Amino acid sequence: MARLGSPAPSTWARLFVLRGRLSRSTTLALGALAFTLLLGAWSLAAALQILPPQYLPSPRAIVEALVRLFVDFDFANDIYISVVRVAIAFALAAFMAIPIGILMSSYNVIGAMSEPVVDLIRYLPVPALVPLTVIWLGVGEESKIALLWMGTFFQLVLLVADDTKRVPQEYVETAYTVGAKQRHVLSHIIFPGILPSLVDNLRITLGWCWSYVILAEIVAANEGIGHIIWASRRFGKTPEVMAGVLTIGLIGLLSDQLIRLLHRRAFRYLTK
Image (cartoon, rainbow, N blue to C red):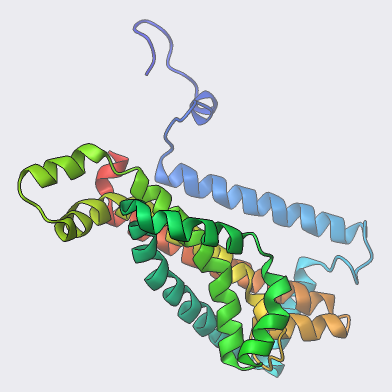
């Protein structure tokens, strides 16, 4: 807020106010501008052939490759297969991570036993686990979903545990003073208390889950976006590779924006 008697800040100055708020229309306009500048820089670099076309195809070549994938290779089915795999793995990870994360921070004995194990496993590189996953689960859908699950669960469970620790102890003590049981504290105090940040963490870890699609679908896969990318790489089809990668990015962007919208609708009080 401007001081009394001081001139109001200009439009440009308001854009750079520390932790200042932007209108919805301004936010959308700035996002569109960022994508336009990126597309323009990409087109210019391709036109000037800063890199050979086989390394940096033009946006038009990417669009043409994407059309070929849909027309000649049933790319829509590959997208569907990848979405189903991610959805199953992510749902399993969330179904397990949310209660475990809450219990880890609610009961010290559970946290003391589980947190060191989770910390150890989450630092293991998922690509290094591919051979073990194939040995244990074979090359079917189970191994692909397991790799996606491993890339998501161990990160999400610690995020949930950290959020649970941030629930003020005063809320818990107040609930006990009015006669609440432990199960009531968990279901009516702790879970609602972490819900806004939990939705944000689900949005973040969904992005991580999508980042492992290519890794999961190079393991003897015949379908999926990752399979298309890997097969195109073998034949040196850079436009098709980039079309597949951008498809993952677009799906991730759409899902991210959808969860953001749901978050704003469900927790309007946080923006007031």
